[in-house]
Length: 252
Image (tube, rainbow, N blue to C red; front, side, top):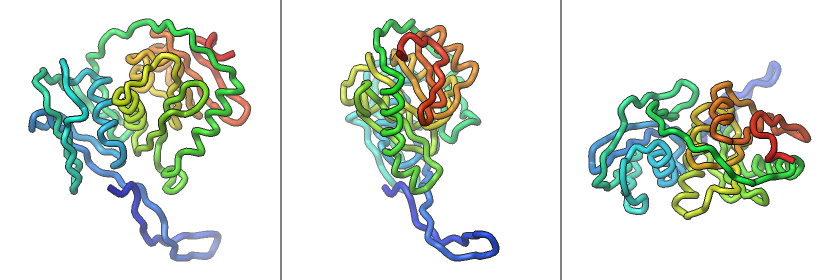
């Protein structure tokens, strides 16, 4: 599927107008079914769909039991329809669409988060260098201007980058990628282009990812979750500066 389309627009500069071709990010509905029964729908960028579904379903414990992401069927059409085969119980009670992000979904009955005990450390200078590299990898954002980006990093390089119209979706995609590739979350960081909400920090805490960093700010509830779960939150990673909000011992 195409992740963007071309459209002729009218562009103004001062008193002058001109017709130009612009790149527009594609937004498409994703319908997720389990054994043919629809359990939820959301909107997303039609990239890394398998990783998105795996990351979201496993992070939110929607399917209670074993299932295989490799066996799901994906049909691309007016909607993207994913059908997940499973013999396990499906839990979607209390699902709501968050106002902060198209396609972001939170499930209030969250499992208690374990306290992360990860000795991972990174030098502040190295973190800023990696973040600059990460930002250069967001080709779709640079093309369209309306895409969020997330990445998974091991402290030396960026392992995976995902782009989506939704902040939560982008994070779910990198988590799903790691789960499918059997990449351990210990000693890893999640990097994000947008604000760090409670849902995003909770997702990382759920998988015991020790560090989460962004070019923007965290929310108060995100910091409460990070304090309790042991996640190091770093915000405003810009140029030669950054703010360390929680568990600062990992940034040296």
